[in-house]
Image (cartoon, rainbow, N blue to C red; front, top):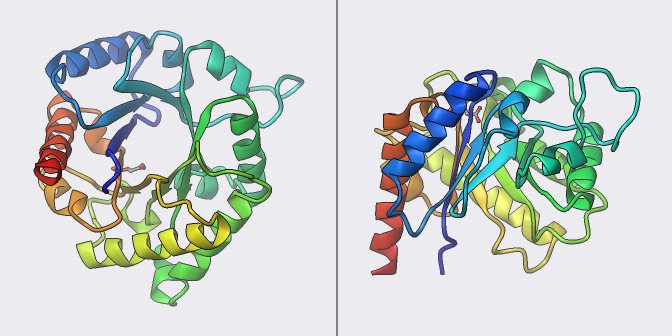
Length: 253
Ligand code: PGA
């Protein structure tokens, strides 16, 4: 049985709180009839407290610190995020790893903090172009999963997002074959680490757009999307969600 898909929009450093609230209202109003897709909005921290949505709509933060409180200027803890009413926290996004130098060890501490705080991590993993071209994709995915999830007892409340770094924000999408191979690898690694983990969502991210969503959602092992650029526009985001909903209805019929 195919998992019910999840589509998450990562706004990155876009949209002020008031613009974000308006965007979410518009999007939700256009999607009142969706039944088979869960939708996650990930605004910047400043927008979290303003978000007021009900299932199947959810809210994610884009990062957190692993400590609950303390002298960590500029950081935000899981309990602060939870108090804003958020449900998920994106961790290990490639921009966090590559621009801000986050290591697998840091990401692992954050995964632990998010789970301990009763929120759900969306753990992002993915190889760079150099790593792909030198045949290291599977090794990188394995390392990022092994280290990112070290010490985790149950993967039940975790989402994984496979996001090849070279496809993020570049307009270059991985081919359906590349996505299928990578998702199969991720699934196998998860099975090794957590036997019986087949109901964990593995999302695809990297230049997902309205015109490639249909072929990507049909790739075996893709349980939804993590979307950057195309999640900032109401029309393109709702169009992708509708495509995913339609595909899920096709499967269910
Ligand atoms: P993109 O970003 O859709 O703009 O490529 C994806 C992401 O960063 O999660």
